Length: 348
Ligand code: SF4
Image (cartoon, rainbow, N blue to C red; front, side):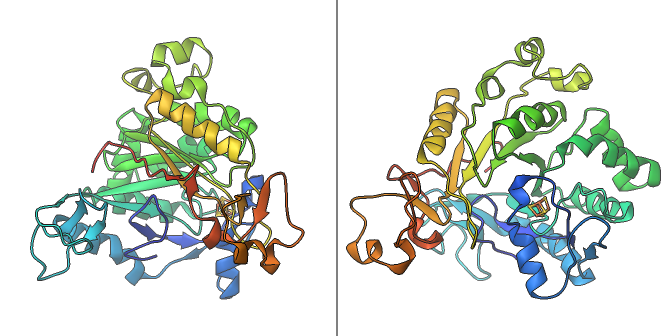
């Protein structure tokens, strides 16, 4: 919950509530559970009450909305953020280049300590969240979930619960094929089986931008047709279900943005470099932006690695299939010597 975040693919985070239930091997070492339990604030799991965040926290997005005019990105160094008050308009506060900043939209990762589609969350909280999204049209809301399959059910519950509200109108329009313009919809998958199960569901939901988060990457994933096919071809290939709304068959239904990375934390599992390379190459061939977020705790063996690092205690006896456990910081986020920071080109 902050103005700024270290998450490479977002500008800010907002948590409307905390707590969740594990639904995938991706959740095995859930950092949200670790972080929230450490402070004794949240119980985790099925049947445990979720914790709504403070009223003051809920006001943050409204403040960002009011300050949206000052949110910029720098065309020279890539900096993104709010221009400091009193700062010269157009001058980048990081690199100092004049006339380098351009109006941008703040990307808000919603629910980094929860899942926005969690069906154990009281429906009135989701009503409040959708209403907040509706009232902040100058923010781009990145709604990422491991429960994409229940999108329709949750939206229908919002509509049934408050049909006359702003959130009800948003739900009605979205269900009817008119998605909110300020929502980027994402699904998390970690291996081919999850991609086969969930990508068709993601593509069947109307959305202005659809993205895939492959974190932690735990297997090779071939996205093939989901990166490339026209809607009719995808339909014929059986990748998109008959139940998909008519709207989604108009225009592009391919994935717009791919994020991938390895796992961090004490029990992190290694990610094979070839999985990342393959994904990078698939995206390049299809012209889809690719962001490589991190290696996580494990990095590929690098003969040029500084000797002091090679001799560190952390490395001792921990060689796994060409990977060394070196720690997240040392592992970094370069893939074959390059940083991949692709982003959906939908909006700056
Ligand atoms: S869905 Fe996300 S927040 Fe929920 S348990 Fe899994 S990793 Fe944690």
